[in-house]
Length: 315
Image (cartoon, rainbow, N blue to C red; front, side, top):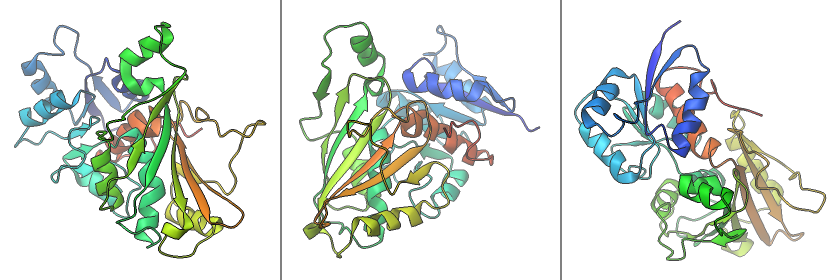
């Protein structure tokens, strides 16, 4: 069995811990995580990056940029889970299902930028419709969304779990300049940034990403079944993204945001009124799964030439 060495730079953070949990159970992988006294030592980090077959950066943006600069001009292969390089021209965007040859590009890349959790859901819904000519690049879109509080990292987790006055539901990003907007716009093929309305709820993991659309704003006349068919055809070969003809609602009629907590899958839904004059497209995923650590492991597998699904939770 071929052995691979993986360095998790930032293994003490929320995403780093999730990545580590997915890797430690795999006998073909040796996981490198620096002790607390070395994790901020640049020399130790640089050595670990050079010793590893792939390094996964689970760091704040500035620290991720520094790590990339430390390895410039070398053969070190990086996956960056931060926002820092998601629209950088010399990095491959790590959403394997984004386009026909995206998985191949990831497998051949030296630098891969992991997508954001909200962009993962948005792009899964919208990119196929832009490619199909249903949504024009200049269409103005809105993205009301909600995530579990683990998406805010250790500080927000503590605010909720230690009862420090965090609201049961709260909207944020109200400057309308959220850091996810550049990747949402660029990788969807849009020319106008959408209005992004993120929020956090009092549950640890899971998220819903929705896009409401008036039929009058579409380029072609289409029904809910037609939109569902476009998405189903796009993801027919995917084991991680499924498109449901009918959403499994709760008895009270809710679409539960935490249904895929701990899973690395994503589910897509199309809702419509009877006249198909209004639609709501919704993606459901775990913000720490397909929205973060699961995607990083999938990208790592591709870069190492392994089964892309190895180590992922498909439940």
